[in-house]
Image (cartoon, rainbow, N blue to C red; front, side, top):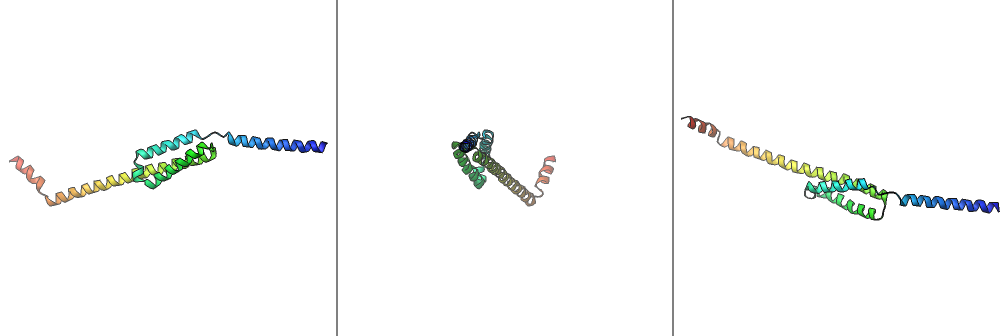
Length: 137
């Protein structure tokens, strides 16, 4: 009988351990703060026109955001945390790339404007001097 009791105790202990482990996994809270950060990063990227200027990076962030929402629906905290971090990184990259592309375009426009002014100055080098000397007469 004592062997049977020991066996039953071992089974009950193993069962309690398994139930406790499953309960711990199931009750892990979703990473709400990280999820909020990732959604905020996507919104900033959209505001920075990343959809136009960094479409690949933005698509990656948006695709992972859809996966994140599915993981949240399944209450998968570990997967939600991982995806939220990836969404934030991809969205930040998209935002920064969009800013860089726009700044590059502004720089090129400024250089073109300077080039036009140089050409105008070369075509009429005395225009500024003649008009000021005419005013003094």
